[in-house]
Length: 212
Image (cartoon, rainbow, N blue to C red; front, side, top):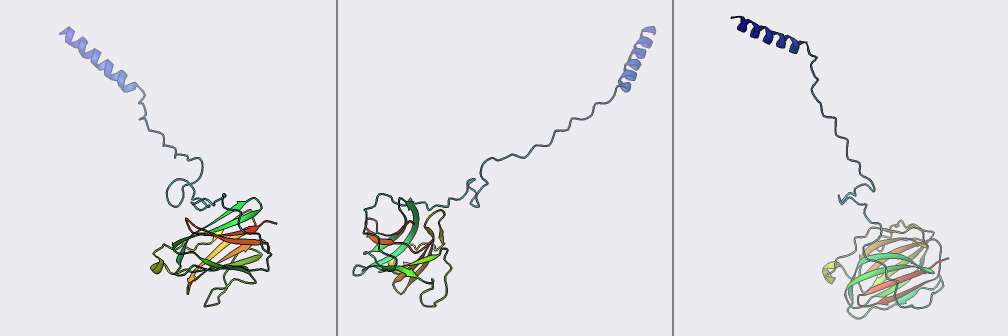
């Protein structure tokens, strides 16, 4: 009987000590810090790197010397081959030693003709509506022997202006094909000598503008 009483007393004492202990707060996980991304912000395409400003295809630097540069007041001309049916598929601009180079990539059959000269203002064929072009001078580039994509089977250049920084050529504005002629405008910092020539395999029209 005495043993049972002692055991009961010990249990009661243990319970009393437990009740007097300070309760431990529940552990709360600290909020997770947002991931810090270093470097450039993700591009609109979601690739995680900014979209490139330069065209994907590099501007060739190993082209032949080409013709001599002509004075600003002299147009450069060339004739297309018989039955030529070409489409401008890409436009590229690059800085070279002594000049800036504009390359018009062409797809289809035949070889192009061209007429390139300085104009007082840029206007669309047919409508005559003004075209905004950056630069203090404007070279008009008309490529003949061209056709609409349905006739040439080639995908046409999208037409977005090609902006250029830090050079003589400041912008190229493409205006699509009209009645067999494809017109573009090259904005230049001033009227400067230029030269135009054609290359094959693949077919390209090259316009070089001499630096000041």
